[in-house]
Image (cartoon, rainbow, N blue to C red):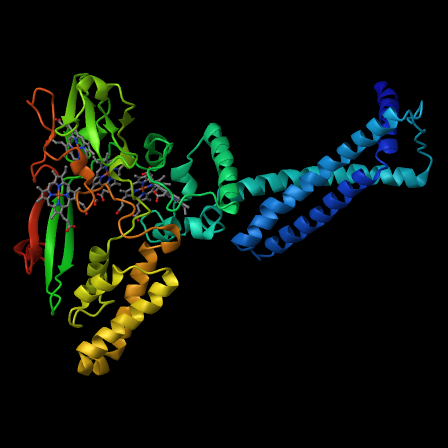
Length: 489
Ligand code: HEC
Ligand code: HEC
Ligand code: HEC
Ligand code: HEC
Ligand code: HEC
């Protein structure tokens, strides 16, 4: 046996005496009860989970956040009770001059000590597991999207129908690294509070003030220098006439990038993603829709400034404003919370046959109904169905009987479009959240490329020629030749 062994043991025995004496109080006992009860419940949950029973998002709040909280509270109450008793007895002069001996020959006491040691080990393991799982749970898409249902529903709904439906919320909203992790947990705690106290704004304002720069989020997955070349986009369009006349718009978007051979910028990504080049701007409004001043530092270091024609402020004053450095999010501000507008949404539904194009005036009627104002999604659902049916019953009675199923299916599609895009409880209506990728109906690219942002001497203007960003190969044509070519006809 080690020579230090007995001394260390003696010391431990002496040190444990006040704990045993002072631990004998109501508060500490309550702590033990809380800890034990929550520990047993937690273990039960973990066991059921081990056998494949997974809690829903709401049960998740209890198992991952509340129970561990009670557990930790219990652990904290134990020393608090000890401190309280110490203070009281000292003040009253009741503290014994020496604490009672711990007699290890006493079997009951020995058993108690073993029990405390085993439980402490178990508690530590449980505490670490619960912390790990709690943190993990708070990072889950389920936690971000579901518990604060009405608040996050719009973003969550749009997200589920987007190219990023399998990318976790935190990948874009938090990203890697400890400081952002801590920041996000603090802000998350505030958000839970604000939801419970009903303090949050409706709609949640966009853009997010301190969103992490895309270099540290999007670019963890997307290589900014990737060369995309051109992208052909075919957009079917249905007119608001009786036969819902179908036409096509065909665009060749010059997405481009950095040409891998010449290292020169090409197309829409081109100068915007050129390494060493940088574009900063000043917007007059919070939504960043009115851009008054743009500073373009080229890759060779030359700086060019552009001022909006109607800026109404001297250059010196504009320069002194806080500037925002342009990144992916200034164009792709809706990469995943992509809310549709009623026109394009109806075009998509008609094109897919979810709304039967043979129903007369389907587009016109759909547009009118979708744009009425309803108090809630539930009211919208019932009103949309009734009015849609009434329209065909009254205006086209023969068809109403012969195409009953198509009419019902069309009503389903309308309700679906509405409930994915309009959230009256959050004050989100059509185009509450502008999409900056394009120029209709939000100004998007035209916030700078409107032909009216020029250098102070007027010698250079941010280009807005229609062929700068895309080739318009067909515009609302019934059977464009380019489409036949693309189909190989
Ligand atoms: C692909 C990246 C990405 C993912 C994944 C993502 N978001 Fe977003 N989110 C964004 C961007 C970009 C914005 C707009 C930021 C801006 O313009 O400042 C945004 C904005 C928001 C907003 C502010 C309101 C708005 O619509 O502008 C909320 C709330 C939000 N996201 C919640 C979520 C939730 C909840 C999830 C997971 C279910 C999620 N996000 C997943 C990129 C993402
Ligand atoms: C965790 C990885 C990841 C992150 C982070 C991420 N993306 Fe993506 N993104 C993807 C994947 C994977 C796809 C391809 C999806 C597909 O084609 O099915 C994609 C597709 C896209 C597309 C093409 C969409 C389309 O219509 O086909 C754009 C644009 C895009 N991402 C922009 C962004 C932006 C902007 C951000 C940051 C706000 C971002 N991404 C963050 C993985 C990611
Ligand atoms: C100046 C505006 C602008 C900026 C800044 C920008 N993009 Fe794009 N990006 C576009 C346009 C325009 C398209 C083509 C639109 C479409 O696909 O509908 C596009 C397309 C894409 C695509 C799809 C390409 C394809 O072939 O389908 C991805 C992925 C993408 N961008 C990622 C990014 C990432 C990541 C960043 C930041 C590093 C970024 N973009 C910055 C304008 C921009
Ligand atoms: C904040 C202002 C701003 C916004 C918003 C913006 N751009 Fe630009 N863009 C610029 C500046 C500045 C240049 C460089 C102009 C120059 O070289 O004189 C540029 C250059 C370009 C070029 C190269 C033009 C050429 O012929 O050299 C393309 C293409 C382009 N942008 C596409 C887009 C697209 C597409 C969008 C929207 C998705 C967009 N930009 C949004 C500021 C902006
Ligand atoms: C600064 C870049 C830029 C310039 C300049 C520009 N566009 Fe576009 N345009 C875009 C982008 C990006 C989209 C794609 C938006 C999308 O994916 O829906 C687009 C989409 C379109 C569409 C398709 C809309 C639809 O039905 O989906 C039309 C039509 C169009 N542009 C016409 C024009 C015309 C006409 C001009 C000249 C006055 C012009 N554009 C100038 C960037 C530009």
